[in-house]
Length: 114
Length: 115
Image (cartoon, rainbow over all chains, first blue to last red; front, side, top):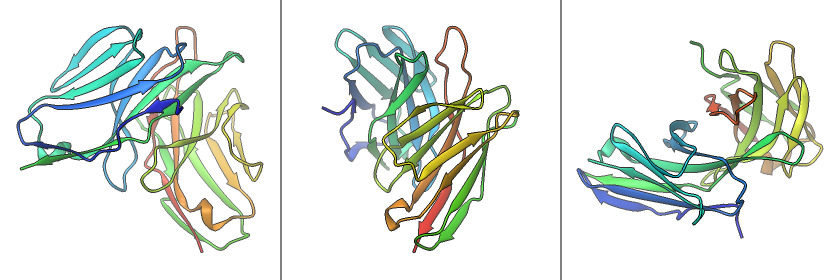
């Protein structure tokens, strides 16, 4: 079982719709959760971070975390063609050596159709 | 506020050669992590440096080595390059401290092509 799993997509949504991206993780000790957006040929850009159960909203983006179900999601409202990119889910947990590690999923490709 | 910077942007090397990639972290950050990203894949963790020491290492061979300097900047060295080392190499910085872990920010990456 992969540590962080995402559907590779592509997920196609019409312009103006809500895009829903999902991510599951295996380490119950995970403490922090991040969503990155990556345009083709570019580096990942942090768009949302969430640390506690529930919803966190930032503009058109809402991150949702359910630690009991080991599930984190990202909702993009009023999707725009410029939102077309790969969205990476990342999970962070402390290790036994006292450091922490980030584990990334393979990403979900989102296509917003004009 | 200076973000994460990396150099060079692109690099072409021949099999068997050695390469050094450089990274300067975001202002105020003290931890640098390196990732390899192949086409269509998520970033794969290579190693993490904090307080000039390698704190964690991913599943990469010893051909991959690194260093962190007192000013928190870092280098990634790859020896005996293989064709399979062709990828986007990403540097990310974060702040380590009580209450962490903190958000991690990426540099623009170095595109390495091995021929």
